[in-house]
Image 1 (spheres, one colour):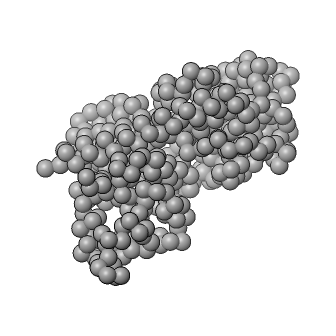
Image 2 (cartoon, rainbow, N blue to C red):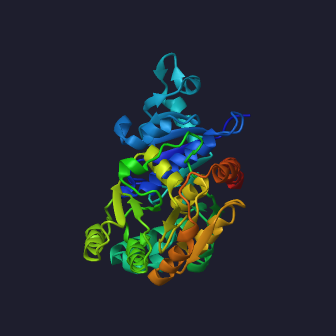
Image 3 (tube, rainbow, N blue to C red):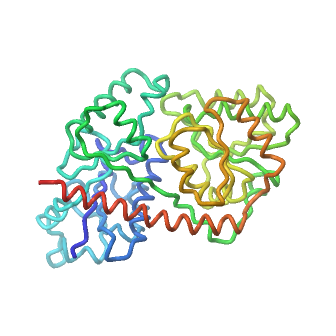
Length: 401
């Protein structure tokens, strides 16, 4: 059977290659390529990348290392890099054959992710990560709210297919756009963290105590570090010696001064010894910071499908997180050993109570038994995730005239 073709359009105006500083977007695409690459050869698609970023762009280069990714092309169809398996389909002799390449690209079962309505090939799978602007309009300016509403309405009313990241997102689609005509799908990504390597203790390098809490989020305002830092001040005042380690890019494209405000809050409340800013760390360091944490905290006010929650599930660590429908949905398939404590979003007192209640019994990781259970669960969910995406592609193809 001919392998299905999946095209990843990583070029403007559809997707900015760096996702405007949205690290989660790049991780999402890498995760998709990675889980599809884990399928047996007779089940996985051929993934082709279209980009105007050339081979200098980090995301296409990283994707090309995945087994299922077979070629990188300019929007014109000119090949930039191909793997041997693809050569017979696109070359005549040793030279690229543009008619063959055009035919191959036109045969795609799906072009994904399509984030903007102006890019509208027949097999486009438009992606709406979340409806944050409906829940937290104060996080956006008026122009961005209007633009999102316009784009989402076009996607859901004038395009055939739309993908959501959670069932909570699909419920939001039905709530906010009840007359939508696009066929909707839900696809859950899983963590790309693999804790099977021998642990390497990150605490000496980052000057962390034996037990620490971990908050690995970009410093975007809706991630709500302010509530977390208020809770850290409260637990300090109650005699708890907990230390919090934070990673992530200190830039919010919508609120440029927000990271500075957080730094000032920490200084003004004498939390410098309790809140440690580690910056952007390597994937290896991130994995070990998860593994060795006493617990992971996710204080976000809104999520589409949280990478932090998925990575915590993959490493088997306890988690304290906001009581959001999507977080509950993510917790449902975490496995029997997973430990979740929920608190109301934006409630520093409740978060402090949760930390105080958990802290006496929290131990630093890694926990081999929890990791083994989490790893087995992650592998099952990764294969299920890959097969679900392949089922979506097949359904799209069957739905087209």
